[in-house]
Amino acid sequence: PGTDPDRCGFTIALQTARDQVIQAAGVIVDATDPVGTIGRRVLAALLPSRRPRVSTRKVKSPISRYNERHNDGRPDHSRTVTSLDVSVLEPSEPRPALPTASRDDRHAAPAERRRHRILALLEEDPTRLWRPRDIAAHFGDVTLDTMYRQLSRWAESGLIHKIGPGLYTATPWSPTPLQ
Image 1 (cartoon, helix red, strand yellow):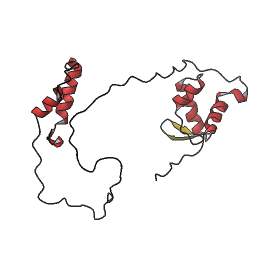
Image 2 (cartoon, one colour):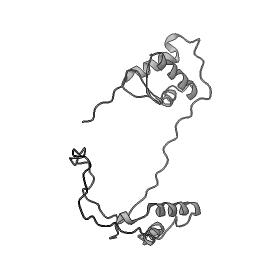
Image 3 (cartoon, one colour):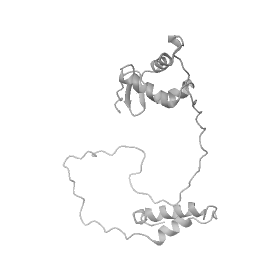
Image 4 (spheres, rainbow, N blue to C red):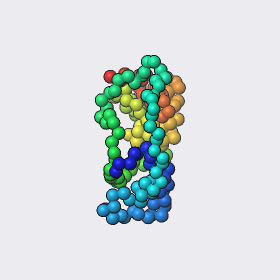
């Protein structure tokens, strides 16, 4: 408490955390120790304090892009950090496994072929951005490699639109302006 956070060395904290993970040291600690191993090492090797400014900072541009402070929930001034809690979350549910072989639908009726089913899916919400993995998981009968190849081929022919790496949509996409 009372220490300027600018004097704390990130590299020291990072190396100490790395050492603790590798050695499994200090994993279970006494809850009464408010500083901990990382805090002790950072406080033992504080950087020199910043020299005070003797004049105000010079504005390099006469028209500032940041002339107005927006209310974004952040504090206007620095605050002293006295404690930090870290929560380890459970991993999310694993994604369903995709098939190892695609279903051959060349002999299926045209309305039941993969192309028509995927186009119908894309047309349900024409502004949604789809990833090949999401489409493959939705149908469950196509491998991810096949999905990438088919979507790229359909985008090149103009059937659908590729708007970025691995992003497809039914209609030309334009971002909505921020308010």
